[in-house]
Image (cartoon, rainbow over all chains, first blue to last red; front, side, top):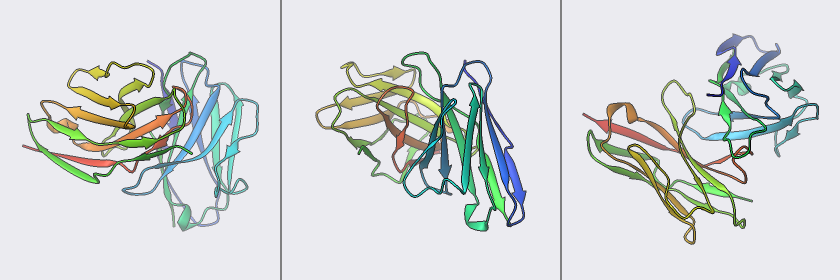
Length: 116
Length: 114
């Protein structure tokens, strides 16, 4: 089955640093990738949608300069949390969908980000 | 805008028994997809079952089945013969097409008692 690989799975860093999270589709072309954020005991909230070769579309309330998304190829999308602060600590999870009709999204395993 | 509501924050069931998780949604579209995802403590998102709105037949996957009531905009998940491994957070979700953005409900934490 389709596989999406997300790295790193866990990152702890100091306040003010930037953190990059990668999301790769291993065996299919991901024309669209989604980035979600999940706080403890809460649901997944869509942050942005990216299409290969285009600028990402951000949801209302998500700072595009804070959360930089790049989707330069059909197999890789990255989310960079710039100048991270403790309030950015959360679980970030990506998903990808390809060109096959009626196929559901495939999720990565998520990244637990902790900002000290 | 589409919304998904799960009114049961927590549910519990005895091992081998049956449990039903509720979900309602709101949309003005006539064709769409509904999903149930399972999220165990590892926080992986696991697709349990999927329903296409234009299909009247309720989807089933082994011990998991849905009761899809399109007019009532209701999409409940029934888990039969519950197993300890079924314990997890369950999310109901909606999307316009199968691979498009998902709108999730608040989730239901399912506990399975031995």
